[in-house]
Image (cartoon, rainbow, N blue to C red; front, side):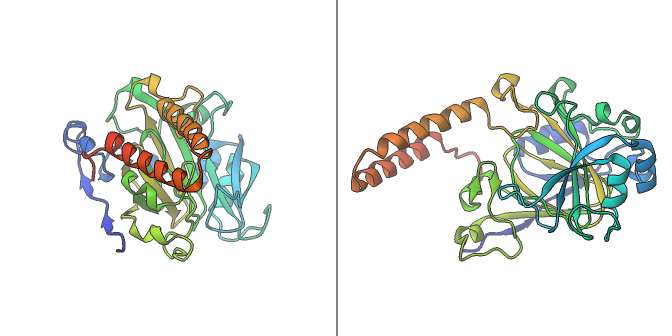
Amino acid sequence: MAGQHLPVPRLEGVSQEHFMQHLYPQRKPVVLEGIDLGTCTSKWTVEYLSQVGGRKEVKIHVAAVAQMDFISKNFVYRTLPFDKLVQRAAEEKHKEFFISEDEKYYLRSLGEDPRKDVADIRKQFPLLEEDIKFPKFFKEEQFFSSVFRISSPGLQLWTHYDVMDNFLIQVTGKKRVVLFSPRDAQYLYLSGTKSEVLNIDDPDLAKYPLFSKARRYECSLNAGDVLFIPALWFHNVISEEFGVGVNVFWKHLPSECYDKTDTYGNKDLTAASRAAQILDRALKTLAELPEEYRDFYARRMVLHIQDKAYSKNFE
């Protein structure tokens, strides 16, 4: 049976109270319209960003193809002055390039020391801070990071999940976002936090037959739209135009639940990592059994996990 194609709901004029009381507990994506984001949606043109963002060196992804794959790393890391990045990312064809004249650029801003500092647009790009207002839908002490993103037209990011809730603020340009429920993880052919299925619109079903069962939630984001992406929801993002976005991540669980070394918001929770290590040890023990017995006891373990750990509170 083919998976469902479902639209992500769009709501206008949602208050903090309404969001927290009625939408947030559902743990489902929703597009919020009419949120006060400041002047960024009108001011952040190519010219303005080039001028105000300055010549600070930024590390970027450069790809010869539109579909970026973090598993096979079909891109290279390069460094450009911020103003040059903005100008190149807005072009369809480049006079100056690293790989090819139609290469794609992607910036995911980093902390000063990415190994220990989180991204925060207010610190890395202080002259842009006064232009943007973050939705005040969570407590300030829950704030984790604000990630500045710039994408070339046509660029498609791999399907992945994060372990924190976040708002994807579409400042300029247009994106198409496809999301998949955490409950459909078994259909997404995961490698770590990422899906192996790159072409989600025309997947190779001979190679990924279960992918067709995954329920697909889809929305378009225009300038000024804010998409709520709950933690663990898989998302695939396509930049239909040159655009600028900002992700705001926050900790909705107690801080001790998260990996203290995580500066990106995508490392599994500490208890989940411990459980995965225990499972790996159990699988090594099962490998000591003859195939017939290994298969039997593995199936029993799966049933035990389903009985004890699966929730009936989610679709």
